[in-house]
Image 1 (cartoon, helix red, strand yellow):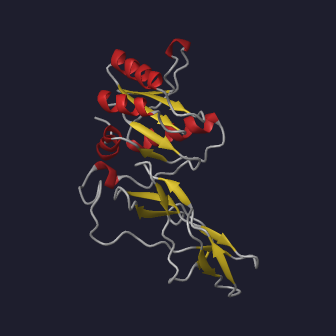
Image 2 (cartoon, one colour; image 1 turned 90 degrees about the vertical axis):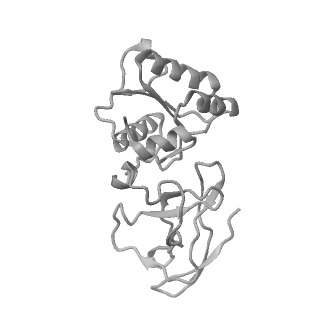
Image 3 (cartoon, helix red, strand yellow; image 1 turned 180 degrees about the vertical axis):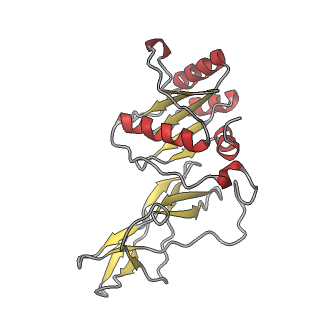
Length: 231
């Protein structure tokens, strides 16, 4: 469990105890946002998408990703944005300074997931962000196992609370093989060990999603898809 840190309200000067949020990194390890205790929080006057996210590097896998910036509400009514230690200048890591398609994209705007439909919407928006145009939802019942389609792509979204199975991954791969398309999988609860291993063998990109609606690549094919976009 993350250790609490002191937070001083810039308005009333009261001191509070705040536990930094922890998120699951794509590598599977918990990532606790490194809230700075030696920097002053800023009152939130208005919110923008840019201010709502912060770049943090995972200390386990050295991967840098965008995470929701932590906020704290004081009893005096002030909502403050807490400073987070930025990645060290010159840090390496996946996608750093390589001039890829990923570096040219705007920040991804997630969709909070409250229902199974929200999970599909989040995946649909993410695929469009990756560069897939004309993402659609197939209406043919014969296409069970495919939730989203685009040129050269079939995708499955698993919103259940149990890890995605080997059978589900192989079913999606077969759909892609039949169509000459890339199969991309999104899951809320992660993947069974054998499902992840098989996806690596079949080169199926795997993504995990949290309730903020932000997919994170879980294996090398997913990393490559994020870096290069559609081919």
